[in-house]
Image (cartoon, rainbow, N blue to C red; front, side):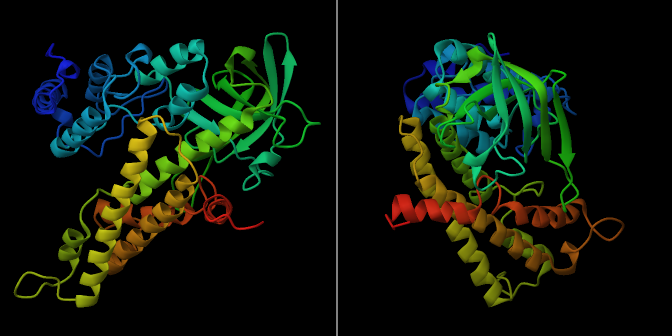
Length: 405
């Protein structure tokens, strides 16, 4: 394994060259060209390809699993420009990200902003090494769009809290090791003021997880039940009864993450290919090589232009966050547009594939066609998760346009 440290190269050209060499020498050959592979990490993670663990460990040792986090917390300490170079090389070489998950995109940035030094050193370093997979405990059966109406209770018991209640739509809770959770610590306070943001280990007798099967056939979402579960008071983030402040900050990161995943190019289980390339597989072209259907050509061009423009807009916001600016109401705009963009793209992919997009199982369909069917069904939930589009439009109306209640 190469000992070169591309982070020490200040010149951007030199950094790019050194990073390219490092990536090619350290990413196992079996993963090069496999950018679609998702490396989750965590105590329960059992990768199909053992090289995924090798790649995570090597990248984490260089700080490339969390490239812009401080070195003291397991990150790479890269500048904004260096991080862009790293990400562009990963795309160019079609090498998978060393690590994905809510630890990097949601709780990590929130702890950097609100966590104590002890919380940062304990949790961020374990996230960066891929040792812990996180899930989110926000919504409840009776508190979805009205999140502040949550009733999951946490009562003091010495140095701990005892938690009772339930959460729903807890993505990947059945595979998660820890959960960041909103709990009610003062039932007599106004509903926004009696909430505490708490970190909890899932591996204990008082936590039960039950997957929720979706129409697509998959079960990424779960119900999570707490029956006298316990969490240390030291794992309260920010202040007791001031969790709503932390919750809003994390929601900004979540909505930016959803917009990034769905709007900029996320396709679920379907391999990302251009719409034009997909159309040529199913539809005739004219003598010049263009698609024969001019209406469809226009729809494909418009979709790709919209996606590219949106990607550049989101990138400007991400650059601001990396410079220390917290996500604001623009994250609601990104969430609404990004999810609508993803749903429209999948509608267009189904339109292109025609009858081949209607398969569920059996002969006559390729694996990616069956995946497209399920991914199209999965997009029906895009406008609900991470805060419904209706709620986001209310945020935009009040906080961006300044409209009255």
